Image (cartoon, rainbow, N blue to C red):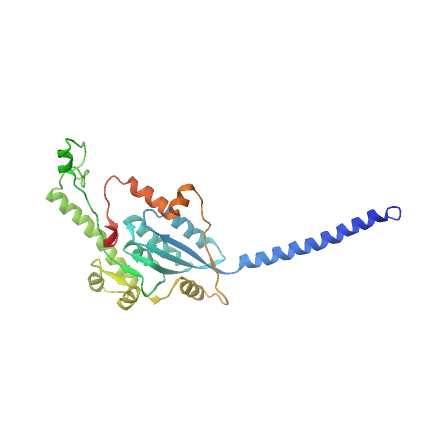
Length: 293
C-alpha cells in the first residue's frame, strides 16, 4: 500500500463506488418489486368482429392466475360476430368471477354478440351514448343460380346427408330446408334470451320484448335493466378496483401485444377475425346488428 499509493487510492475509489452502485441497484430492485406487487386491475379488450375466442380466453386465464390482478375489466368495442366464440367468452368470464370481480365496460359499440359477452360480468357499465342491444340471431344466404346460368356455368354437389349443402349459393333452398334453418336460428335465439334472463334477473317475457333486434343507447339500456351503471373506461377500472377491495389509487395493467405484419396492418383482433371469416365455406348464424348484415 505504501509502495503504490496511487493504486491503493484507485482500488479504494472502486470499492466505494461499487458499494454505492450496489445500494442504488438494491433500492431500485426493492422499489420495482413493490410496484409489481401492487394490486391492480387487469384490462382485457374485445375489438371488432368476434370470430374467435382463444386469445381472449388465454389472457383471461393469465389474469385469473396473477395474484397481483385483483379484478378484471373487459372493454368491449364490438358489433358482435360468431355465436360460438361469443358464448365461450361469456361462459369463461362466469367461471373466473368465482375468483375475481369482473366489470364489463362498453365502448362506442357493444351490440348483439358484444352484448352477449358482457353478460358474463359481475357488473355492466356503458356510456350514455353507447350503441348496444341488437339482441337477435341472423344468417344470410346468397343465391347466384341465375347468374351462373347466364354465364354458362354449371355446378353440382356430391353429398352424404340430406342437409349437408344447405345454404349453397348455386341452388334455391327448399321449404323443408328453410324450416330446418329457422329451427336452428330459433334455438340459438332462445339461448340468447335465456342467458339474458338468467344473468340480468329479468323475466323471459320482458327479455323477449327487448330482443327484437332493437338498438339501444347506454342510457336506455340501463333504464331497461340491460346495463347496471353509466361510466367510461376509467370509471369501470375504478369501480372494479373498489369491488375487489383495492384502497388508494387504482392502477390498470394491459396485456402485452404480440407483433406480426398482419397485426400491424389490421390490428390484433382483426387478424383472427379476417382469417376466420375468410375460411367459412357457408354463412353461419351470427350475433350482428342491422348495419353489419
